[in-house]
Image (cartoon, rainbow, N blue to C red):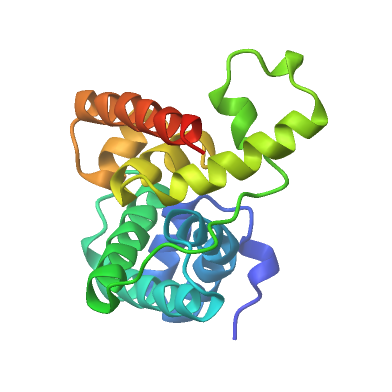
Length: 190
């Protein structure tokens, strides 16, 4: 068994090299990304905790199996988020799941990130807005929802989003713009 405490500060690329030499080190990757990927999958999918765990395990299994194919010219986080994206889409298609109970993290005010003038909003207005955003997110396409979540929750750059979604950077910008318009339209109808 390895001592993960000694390796937690290493960059992802160094850990990948260690995993390729000794598979026991894969636990470091799992520990590092478990919470991040769980939150990401929950945000884009609205799946039950059990289904999220299934998608997460499939993601980690795919990452382990494909680690030899990982291209180090990409950030590891971008690569593993792309795998989580694909596994979530696969799960939805296989199970024909519908979005339900999409949750917003209390730690980040998504409404504030989308609004230009959050200073004027009162706490009650923000709670109402948060509820409206949650309901509106349930009504936009998975692709649009994922674009907004990657950009505003996960703080991904357009370049990282391009790699995760396998879309040109310009297309990512258009997708975000259209997603924001669609979200605003649904918010107005709530």
